[in-house]
Every structure is written in C-alpha cells, then in structure tokens.
Length: 193
Image (cartoon, rainbow, N blue to C red; front, side, top):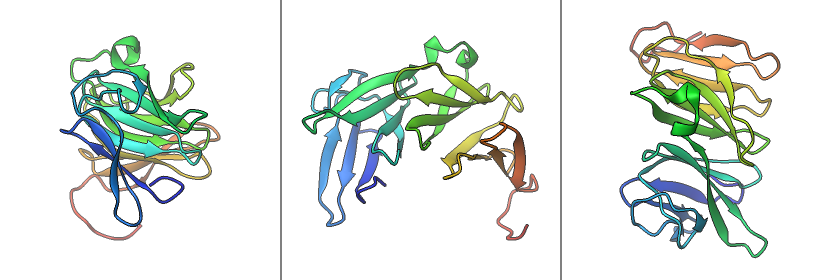
C-alpha cells in the first residue's frame, strides 16, 4: 500500500504494475502488457512476470521481476510521470550466481532501498534505489533455505520467513545479527511464544 492509500499490484501474467484507489478505480501505473525488461516512462516500460511489490514511505516503488531476474524501481519525475529503471540484475551479482537463484520476496526500508530475499544460495540483500553498491545483509544460512516473505520494521530491523524450516528470523539494524524470533521448525499454526 502506498502512502496515499493506493494499492499497487504486480500483475504477473499481464506484465504490468496496476493501481487500485480507495474508491475501487483500477489503472495501469507502468507496463505495456508485453513481456520484457524495457526501462523508460511507465507507458512504454515493460515487465517480465512481475512477482512482488514494495513501496517505501517516500513513494519509491520496487518491483521484483521473475525474468532476469531483476529488481525494477518506479519513481515519479518532476512532472508526475512514472519512470521505470532497472536497479539490480542477477547476472551482475557474484553472490547470486547459482543455478537455482530466485527472487522470493521484496520489501523497502526507510531510506528507500529495496530489501530482497533470494533462494538458491539464500541471501538477504539491500539494493539501493540510486544504483549504489549492493549489500549482503544475510549470507546463506543453509544451502536450501527458502525465504517467502520479508518486511522492514520502522526501527530498521528486517524480518523474513523461511518456509522450509518453518521459522521467522530478524536481522538487527544496529549490528546485523540474525536471530530466530519464532517457529519451532515444525509445520503448523500453533500460537504462542
């Protein structure tokens, strides 16, 4: 959900980013509907199976894309038009060169950086919107970790789930330590500490 209450949705097989306003109006924010990875203004940009969206509090929109795989960034220019750019491509990241690499989840931090969880070699990465240096926040915990969700708390701590190990982990913003905060490693839906 964007700061103004608009829902932004990755239309996976439609290769678009769609917006839904509070009154139910649906519109295309970016994407022609043709599969691709073209950067540019929203009406000419293309996406290849967008699979996740995160919106920063400054209205920077990050889109995880299956084809590539890559992370795309949408920002408004001075005239209010959406501009799409590619800020992360798997092939340019040595830590992500793995035959089973997959973008699993995407979030946004307070500084308008994308935070992604990957499977394959299972990393948690910070991807700056300005194209700066990629930062590995969590090196591989295990060869078959399968993250499936990620979020950034207001204090900067990052929480992610491991669907194969049935656990939730926290990466502390102040020192980068990773700790398990929930889950016993067993499938189920039991409430409790």
